[in-house]
Image (cartoon, rainbow, N blue to C red; front, side, top):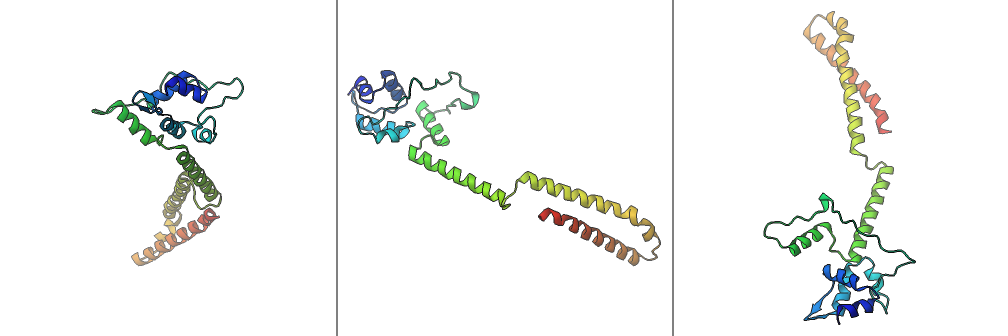
Length: 199
């Protein structure tokens, strides 16, 4: 079968079949187009291929609704989407490498499975957030920073608040005991203040 007959078989234009050929979706045996192998590739890679293959008469034809046509792709490629060919690599090898890296070589069933897994994991994360089983790193960092600031402020206030009392003490042991007591008292006060975080 030639490309024109294949286009007629699927009810698409010859230009569409040419695009399929450029994408590597058509298989040729000698000079003839292998219909069965080509249909398998189209069903695997085409967006609506698997749904269409289940139709008996027209296995891979896209149906257009009304007068809508498919949107045209932009001719300008962003810098991040450009293909880089490594030294000693052919265009085909570079294309295969990029398709594998981006997951674009999956068939429709595999892509649907990956999408469903992603959505399930996202729902689980939302549930865990609402249940407070997980928290955002930024929230933890902010809370810890605020607590450290309170500790610093409270400990730096000890000398100025208690210097007159400590000045009256006679021995080093008395000063040490007084300082220890003041620090324990400050830490207990900070612990009581921190209980509100856990609520």
